[in-house]
Length: 409
Image (cartoon, rainbow, N blue to C red; front, side, top):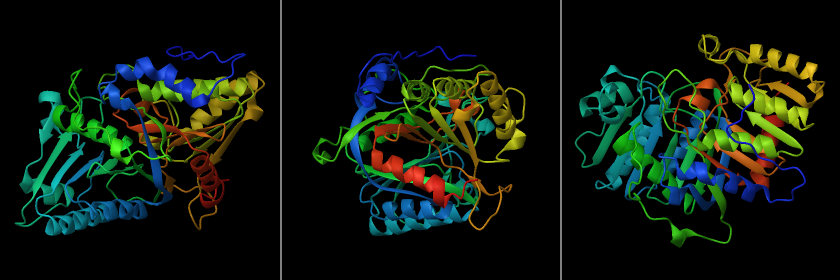
């Protein structure tokens, strides 16, 4: 099936890649209910990026939490209360509350509970007496304004977003949930106007869950006072929760991925724990046919039981075999390179040792990263939050990490 929901014709045209993507996505962004349209096309700067062990990523979040003075906003798809990650975050939250008892803390998770069914926006408040057991959170009797909510849109509408907003000044978007896994994970810290965009996404999610009405007022003004000469244009490319069994295709995230694959001239690098969405596969096939070099960085045996279920798209190994057969028929097999993640001190891919990092690089300069995987769930059902920008330094770093630190083979 060839994706036809967004066609970008670049033949014979000279263009600035970022501006082309902005123009192509503008009407899609205008209809996105996950964020106010005024904040979908924004700007900002990256102050720090990191790829490494999950607990190192959590430490980055903890340091930001302990800098907070007024507000902490956290989303995570899974939040395992008995995990070391949960303990680390809870400890940093308590330290911050001790230093500033008036701080506001809001958390949204997805526990997929039956309690969500039938509730407005499929959103429920998690009672305080459940925090310690379910999330590993406790604040004793300290003064605080803490609220924790759970959202899930049945059947398949998972809230898959993972980010932290501190004082409307800094945001950390990461690939990991609050759990303990021997995964490679990624975190990017950003400042500038883009932080208000993340805050707007969070507040819409926190107040309206999976059914966000259109034309809501802004939840926060843009950080104009933080704009600097280093700021670059940023697109917020998300998708909302869709619980149905069919494919919900047209959203900023999917259109951004497809546009990037369509305009690629030389190379595409995709890193994802799972790769089986129909449109993702077609995008790669079409790029290879145009003689664009595509590098897929995948993980063997990641969620294989789930991905092998009907309508999920298949395991990475099965999908790669099918793609190579299609490319062989098109005489374009040489343009696809598939690499499998190997953990530190490992000699070959091993079950339980995975890369959970998600990003796409086009022509060594356009980078899209965040929460979305290249699988059926992320393309067609889950709520995802990603950013797209032009950053050659980040692109070079991620390519180097994938080549050296990841020990690919």
